[in-house]
Length: 106
Image 1 (cartoon, one colour):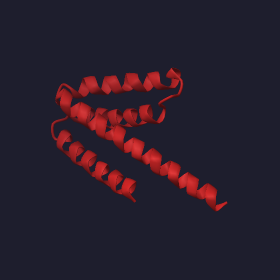
Image 2: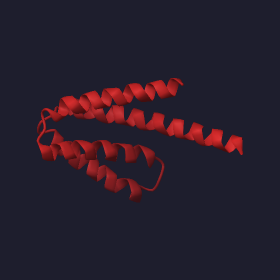
Image 3: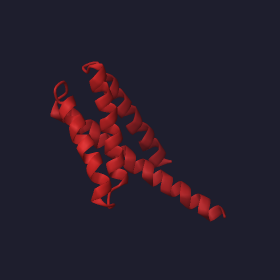
Image 4: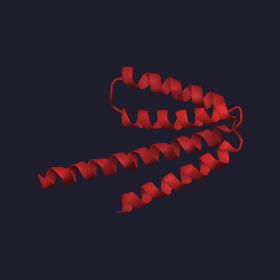
């Protein structure tokens, strides 16, 4: 339950930041914000996997960061990336716990 509450809290923080940040961004840059969050999640999910899988996501992440830094501070970009990383790790932990429960029920 604690992880579920943390997940919901992080989702709320990220959504709040997205709303604040989107006020500063052009339509195209809003797409880069979505790309940034998606790439960050994929990189976390692929940790420990082949660099061939991770490298394109890292390039996408850097491209999105570069575009966003014309309107957002580096701290703002890093902050939302950090929160997305934490959220992804919590989601993965909850998914793992859910899979374990399913396996135990069989």
